[in-house]
Amino acid sequence: MNFRDRHLWIVILAGLSLGTLGVLLSVWGNPQNSGICVSCFFENSAGALGLHDNSRMQYLRPELIGFVLGSMGSAALFREFRSRGGSAPLPRLFSGIFLMVGCAVFIGCPIKLVLRLTAGDLTAVAGGIGLVGGVWAGLKTLAGGVHLAPAQTQKGSGLLVPGLFALLLVFLIVRPGFLLFSAASSAAQHAPWLLALAAGLGLGALAQRSRLCVTGGVRDTLLLGHRSPLLYGLFAFVLSAVAVNLATGRFNPTLYGQPGAHLDHLWSFLGMALVGWLSVLIGGCPFRQLIKAGEGDADAGLVAVGMLIGGALVQSWGIAATAAGVPLYGKVAVLAGFIFVFGLSLVQREQEGY
Image (cartoon, rainbow, N blue to C red; front, side):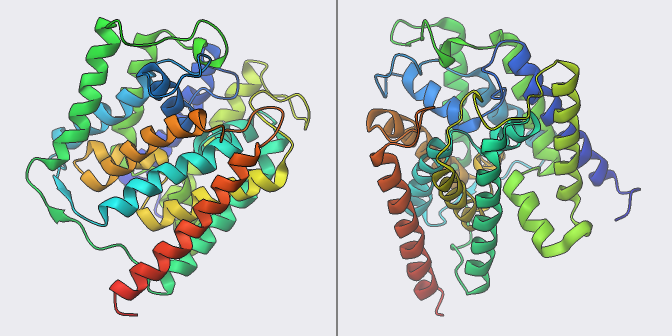
């Protein structure tokens, strides 16, 4: 690895920022071990928009808005904004829904997985193994000839999802009467909105420049080993999160009593395996999809819309796990997700002529 490579240092800076802010946002008010969680934020935001009626999960998260708009600003500044799309739109929409299913059963996205591990949450180990296994399965699927169709240039379509998030920013500032906000529980725990928005904007810009992605880092490490720049970004993420957790007294290595966790290890494994597999097929984890949407990728934007729908469904249909464990509907939904991945793989292989 060439440590004179400017891009490598941008990746490392992005990893350090993600780990540091991921813990500090929790210190500043976000739920413990959940300073940044894309899936949790989507569930909260779906509730704020009235898409589900769980009064404990309703808050329009500024971080989500910041990720997309920060990425868009960076892409525009460096002339990398490209409006494109048209690659298997419905499969991507449903992939976004099933990403949320896997995350809701584990209780967290890949970023929260790392944050939980770096805070000493041993219940997240099963999810970590599942994520690596899912990425490995995704690579085997790609090697078997399964690929989604390439995106095409589409004038204007890449602005739709960033425009949606800009509208959400207006809602956040104006606070129209139809927005719902929880008075108690995890959604009522949040950092000051301006601080959270600023953190999201900064991370969105850095992630756009660095291409930082948790599942992408695992994927590239399996393919390239120590030559992967994203591997060093993941190391920086882990080391900075551990350091800040230790400095703030939030490192608590134990299996029991962890916040936002459960002891159904098999379903933690399967939930994250589903997320890892899907992320490889669609080109990035939930966080990466938001960054790509900000760059003008309408396909990633459809995944983001799917995640918003999924955030509503996992709450409305009783899919999301709690500290008590994974409900029956959550287990069924994860199995349905694997059936979807198998079916998608078969269909796409046929389309590509294999």
